Image 1: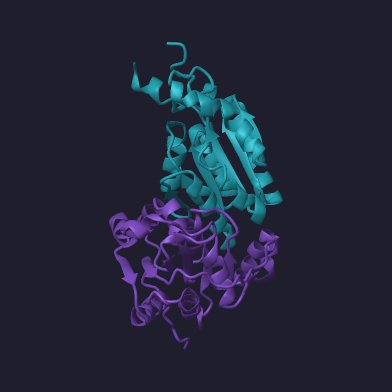
Image 2: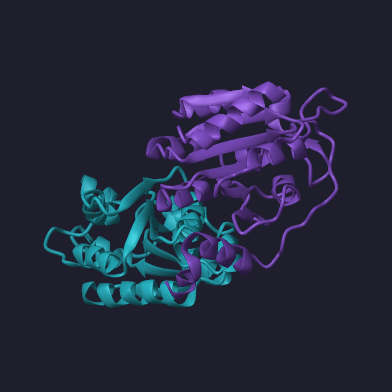
Length: 182
Length: 203
């Protein structure tokens, strides 16, 4: 099996990772909390190269919700990047953003979703949207490259304008297109 | 300056510890971890500079990190309990890697889960949070047992040479409840306004 099939990531020709970076800049995001995913690799590189962004690598995704709250207390906007398995780690911590009314936008790359080969990714991938919505998070989903920018923009706007956790799920179909079916 | 008493166990009294840390605070922001530390910072004097937590167990240290990164000119002191710190102990590594000079994390260690019936925590059985913080990379990690050590800690917190971690052994006796506001949107908004003024609400 090829490594690309183990960890699916968009090809260099795909514009959407750079479009997400541009949106983070437009919205004035200053703190980026993350647990890495191959699907976010290019976006993470762009953020790391940006001196106006503080990139905080987390030991578990739930730290990211706490980070977003601390950042907002101090007047900075943040975003949280993770893969769908990480959503299982943030469930209770979302209560912090809900109770305080903290903007907490989350961008999730999906696994266990479309053509998955790893059985361990499927339970959480299948439950990602339901779990987030059960915890009061507004979820939008993009499965086509041309939908990513406006979906992420909607997620950022909903979070920063209406003070709550929001999420965009980036479908595995987007990420795995290169090697899917081989 | 507050007198720092010791309890029947010979350990420091938690309310005196917190009062001493927050006295003449010079704009220092404080986050109080879920449970008794949130009541402790409130007993020291409720203030918009205080964020007492009603939830988010395990998150206090990283909340302090986000705040310290956003407000590098302000001191940020996270005051939390041993149970809360143990739940999010990986966050010590996250904090250490960011090296925020303005962040201190103070664990009030009574070796028990005080809010749920005084069950013993791991620190009662020899788990050493100072070693864990040092191992995570917070070079200034220290154990505090005496009033003298506490006053040194206070001075170092205010000097802003962080990140700093302290495990303060405290008397396990429970203190009277002194509850902060429970409406968390107010707790968030009042701290934001204290930092940024009325424009905070137009961000």
